[in-house]
Amino acid sequence: MIWRERKIPLMVMGVLLLGNVFFFFTYRVQYQSRLNDLDVRMEQAQKQLADAQRARMAAEQQLAAYAKVRHDLDALYNERWSTQARRFTLLFQEVKKLATASHFDPRSYSFSRTETQTSKNDVANEGNTMVGLSFTVQGTYEQVRQLINLLELSNQFVIIDSIGLGASGSDPKNLTLSIHLKTMFREPPGAQRANKQL
Image (cartoon, rainbow, N blue to C red; front, side, top):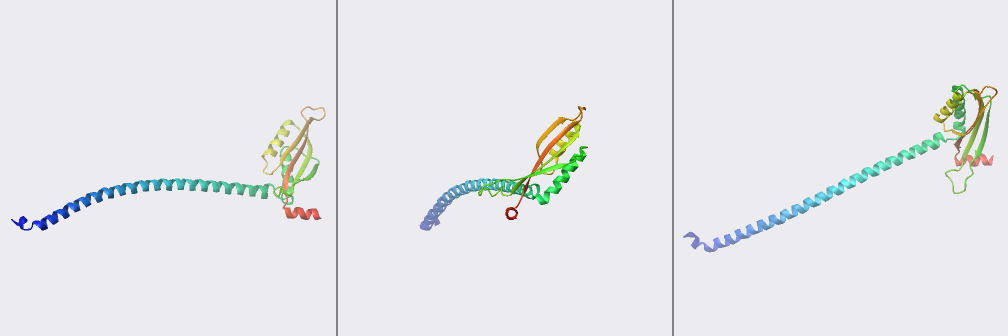
């Protein structure tokens, strides 16, 4: 028979076949294990990526909120608390317009000015000036309420500092209103130094 004549080559081929089968199954098990490890590492990397993306979105939202606060502060300082030369006339016109809208006709106005005292380390409040505006009018309680409401809703930065209310004459419906308003103006540090030198 042929297999007896070629016994040695067949045995070598059998050994090689067994070696290949052993190597195949061993490699397959190791390969599957490596694939499982890679899948686990990929899931961990995806979780880390998702966490990093969430952290980035939170940081971007925080940065956007910070930018909005900064923009609002700039608008507050440069527009609502801007210099006296820029805002005083507009403020006075607004108060007169609101008094007229409430059917009041103030005969006279008085003004006061107070510069904020600051220490050398308090650079942020340097140059702030408080200006007061006072006037007295006569009218009904409804007119008084309307004026106060309009002042509180005004776009100008104005504070109702004090109110005095009393009856005027014999008519109990006719009231005398003494009102003191104040606002803050922000002077640039250079302008304040120039004003002090003058």
